[in-house]
Length: 638
Image: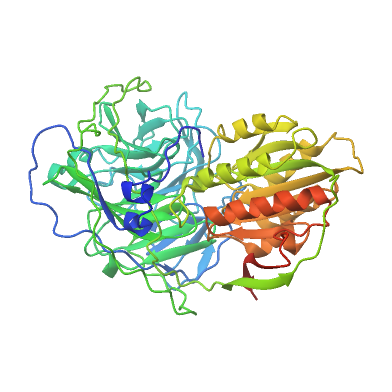
C-alpha cells in the first residue's frame, strides 16, 4: 500500500481521550456537500443495518474477480491468481457446484470481471458476455456467454500503459450510453463501445480500483449522480467523473477496493481472498439498502453509503467484515451456502449513533471541479474531513469454522543468568507494510504506528557500539529499507519512511532478510537474528511449481533463511492470522508470538530484545524475579 496514503480513518476526540473505540464502527456522517444549493428532499428515515455473511458451498484456489452470469443464474469467478493456470475462470451454479468456464488460462495479475446484465441499456452487448483484463497493459478480452468464443485482445487501449487490475463495468444505468467503462492502474478512465470504439474520458494519474456508473438522480445520489465513480485506493480517495472529463475528488476516510449499487431482489457476493472463499448475503438483508452504494475496502471492511439531502452529506454505515476483500458484486443467483458448524459470536450491542457535524470550520464543503478530459488533474480541492472515525469490527458473525483460540498464562520458575559480556547482535527487522497495517488495533492505535513505536523501543535496547540492525519492508514486493548498520538512528528514521501497497508477500520479506544478512562474515561472538512482523495471512504468493499452497512457498523461504544460522522470530499482530504458519516459520515454536494489541506488541519486542544477545540462553519473558506470570500468546488449539 503507498506513501502518503490515508488510513482507514483518523482518531476521534474520544479516542484521543481514551474513549470507546467501538463507537467508530457504527454510523458516521461525512460532511461533504455538493456544490449547487440546498437540500432537495427529506433525510432518509434510518441508517443501513449490518448484514450477516454466509460462505458459498464451494472451495476456490486464489479467487480474485466475481460477477453475475445471466444465462446460468450463477456467478463467474476468476481463480488461480497470479498465473491463471490451469484455468482462469469457474462458473458457480445455484446448486453450489462449480465447473470450468471457458478454456482460457494464463491471464495473469488480478483478473477482474465485467459482465453484461439484462437491462434497458445493453447498447448492443449480449447478456452473459464477460470482459476482463489479460495481464497485458491496456488489453481487454471479450468472452462469449457460454465461454466458448474468446477474443483475447478484443481491444487495445491506445497509449495505455496501465493494467486492468481495477474494474470493468457496463453502464446499465444509461448515463454513458451503455458503454463499457474501464479503469487502469495508471489512472486511465475509458469508454469502449460494443464495436470496439474507444475514448479516454480522463487520466487521474492514480492506481484505480472499484468502478460503477451512477444513475442521474440528484436527490438520491447528490454530487455523484450521472457520473462515473471510481476508487483510488492508495490515495484514500474517490473520484466522480463527468462525461466531459470534469472530475471531483472525495476523501471519505475509506480505501476503496470495489463499488456497487445495490439492485432490488439480488444477493451480494464477495471474494474474501485471504479466506479463499466466496461469501454471500441474501436479498432479504438488502431491502433497506436498495439503491445505496456499497463500498468494500481491501482490509475487509464493508460499508453502505447513501446521500442525505437534508444535511447534504454522505452517510456511512458499517455492514460487515472479512479478512480481505478483492471484488464484490450483486447477482440474482441463489447459490447454496455452507451450513454453520459453530454458534456465531453475537454482535456487540449497538452504541449511540456517532455523527460528525457538517458545518465544522475545518471542512472544505464545496469540492472544486477541474475540467480535464485527457490529462491528469493538476489541482483538485478535496473535501477533507478531520477527526473521521476509524472503522472497527462491529462483531458481525462469520460462520466458517475456525479453530478455538485461548490465551494461556503459566507461572514459571526462572533461574537463569545472561553473561555480562553478552554477544553482539545482527538483527533484521522485517515489517509488513500492506495496507491492512493502516487499520487500527482493538485499542484504537494504527497498527503501523504501534509497530514503529515498539521497534524504536527495541532498537533503543541495542548497543550501538556492538550491535547492528537492518530494516526490510514487504507487501506486494520487498525492499531493504535500511541495510545492516551500527547507525541505529538511521534504521529508526527509515521506519517513518515506509510506503504501503497491497499484498502480503511473506516469502519476499524472508528472502530480503536473507539478502540483508548475506555477505556478513560469521563470527562466534555475533548472533544473526530476524524478527518478522505481519498482521495477516500470505496473499499474492505464487504456489510452488508442480502444485502446492502459498504457505509452502513461504515455508521454503523461511527454511532458506534459517539455513543461514539466523534465529527467526515471528510476530502476528491482530486477529486474522495463521498462527500455525507463524510457528512453522520461526526457528522454534516458542519464537512465535501473537500480539492482539499495541501494548502486547511492545512487550514482545522487549522480550526478544533481551533474548537475542544471550545467544539463545535467555528465554523471552524472564526477569530478575524468581516467579512471573508470562503471557505466551494466542495459539489455535487443534
